[in-house]
Length: 199
Ligand code: URA
Image (cartoon, rainbow, N blue to C red; front, side, top):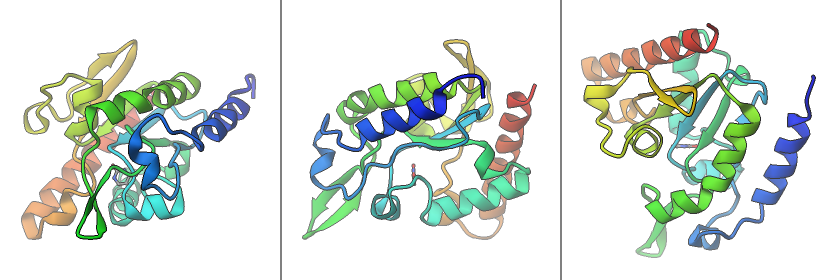
């Protein structure tokens, strides 16, 4: 190791654990900071933690995370080689009928969390960023991003290649041929991102 990014990521994570930059701290159980290989050349970014991630304090460990793990295995990408993170680090949710319902992060929440995202991006310094779903793509690539038209296209984000694929929760809502098609496309995009990251 020729730099101190491991230590700086750990310090940044420690700071983020007490974050109250947006109102989501009121309902969260854990701040879910990014995790993985600090020297990853490929970074995956989702929307925000769900209930399982909030309970466990780790990204992509619920149902969508399990599907992502299967897609990563099919793409030949070990999860531990990557950096996995989210647009926001506290669970975006709304109180409804006495319970919490997941929702997409609000623009103000994404803006408030940007300090942690920028720190992760700067410290890990990946060659390629893969957005999982249109929500991260609309913040990182362009605001009108359309997944069906622009999935797999390679954009540039301040010198880093950036592309988008389906969110791993999407195939979970499909069955039969549709499931196979979307899961196959997710695997193909992971392979493409992995190949670009090792160029
Ligand atoms: N969905 C996301 O976007 N991120 C997670 O960490 C889990 C589910």
